[in-house]
Length: 59
Image (cartoon, rainbow, N blue to C red; front, side, top):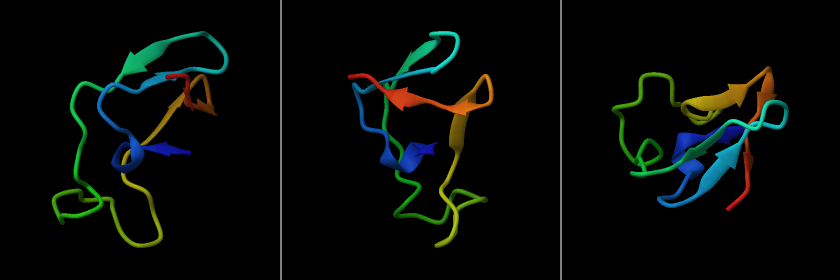
């Protein structure tokens, strides 16, 4: 599953079903700070899906 802590500036992610695309304009630091309320060692922060499927990296 794609989580924001793994997304890097300039990368593009696409929906596997409808073709929706997003480009990362600014990377986060959820993996290194305590600001993300849902982040813990067993759960990725901010998991992204579209049409019920995980987004995939295309660029």
